[in-house]
Length: 307
Image (cartoon, rainbow, N blue to C red):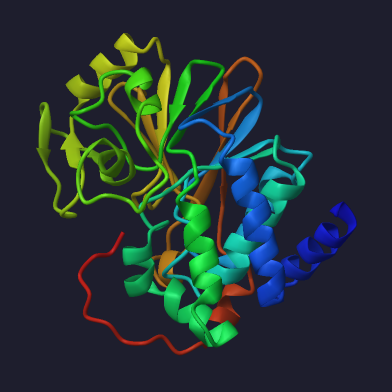
């Protein structure tokens, strides 16, 4: 099992898609692992936390060069593996293969793009159709999305989530009660965890995204205090410098897709937490191969939703 999986990992690291049958088997094995994981995964430090990847495969390899290879490094990815970039298939399948091969060294939680509805609009569905000639691979991957955890806690002190907080969630225990094995709902706690954003407001506000909420420093302070946390680590928003601390360093946005959409010019980062939960932010720029990716024609779109 591990030798064939190792071959698939090497193949995927060369940006070569595996067969449809291999995808089916890989997704089945991944679901068997993910179904055993809780809504909130408890993770031991040291760990390296990564934000959005969005199908930027060569930049994912650059991330591994900067942060260390799995399983040498213990990784936690905060979702949004697919859409936007040109290599969502290879990106997601490589991360999934590493998860199956090293389940205790690779934690993958769900982002708002790990959704049937969103991937049909923002690229992953079309990419699967183009590379495999049918929607089967897209369906297998979407079934995996439904089993992904909604968050993680490092050493009981750092809460990690894709988007943010919810007015329906005051404690981590409430997240444990969510039935996560479904398509991302349009509203409610599960939706909010994947869609919400911190903002310079008081309390809660309507999100311009049309899903989730905006939440202020007072909300973060209350949640951190009530749950005995030091920090909330999240992704979901482009940050030009790669990471951004807010609200007296109680929440940080980590962004791991450099030169996002091959044109934003931003730096990317990963957050390394050592065994004492000391933070180190490692920044990196786009891989050289991104230049080649730019030559691939992109279907023009007038869609307004950007992040």
